[in-house]
Length: 210
Image (cartoon, rainbow, N blue to C red; front, side, top):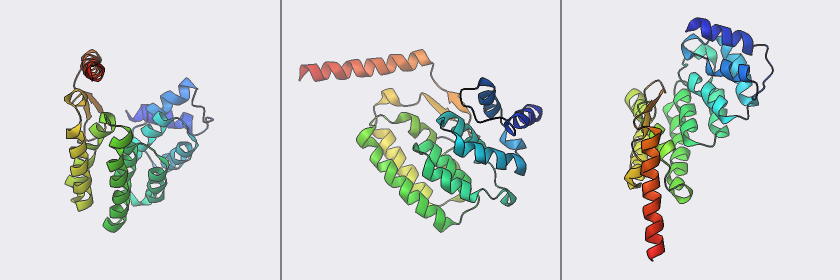
């Protein structure tokens, strides 16, 4: 709601950045991208780069990725956010925002780096389903392919799908995201835990029998 957003911004304009402060966290989580003004964007940009808490940065980044008004001048913000963030889902949110401001060749350079990082993920995170589910969701690469049609997005999506399909079924289809970025539960936490426990128990059993 607009009123909730405006109340949150009224607080954030003067509040100290305090990640342990419940009121501060609630204000960040109450932000609504549909009501962000140029003044709001300036305030939130400063807060973002002061935050150590990844979840709070993710909330701001998730709002900013929808903003395409040239007057906001968020291109440099998204470039810096892409460099700052470690996780691919947050990097892709930065790319989604950057695509509103950058040229196709600029996006291609960024996505070349992104895809290299993606290809390395299985080396250290073989069951990387949390990142993959965002990348393949309606909010991720399919959205960018649909809106822009860039080959670099298609290539990244094909690479992600290959790595996703290489994972055991126990790690697939637990959740997704809609086009706006809302988290959608597809299986209950209990069902997910049961599937994962069964997978790791079978893996331990196989290892012990070798």
